[in-house]
Length: 93
Figure 1 (cartoon, one colour):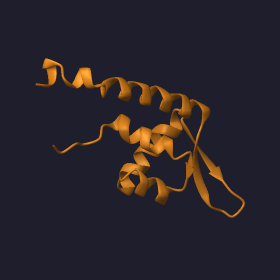
Figure 2: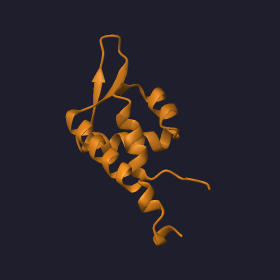
Figure 3: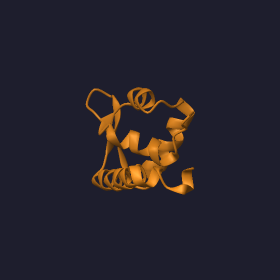
Figure 4: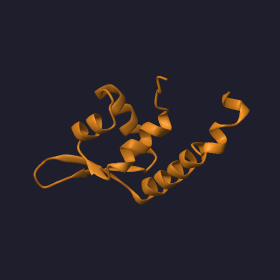
């Protein structure tokens, strides 16, 4: 079965990185540059990721406390949805 990730799964993949540059996020989360920009803007506007300017003029993006809280909730929901008894229900037959 071809599994396409949801927006929530992409967001979780990005938040899991902790702190990384655009290239690392793009490759780790398996997305295009255009997608990366949209997700970064979305997450920064809502306070889930901060832009960090280091002394070497390198820009990285860091998951905030709010972002870590969101990641925990996403992981909890995904874990609940992947339980064997849910998969075995008639809904997915």
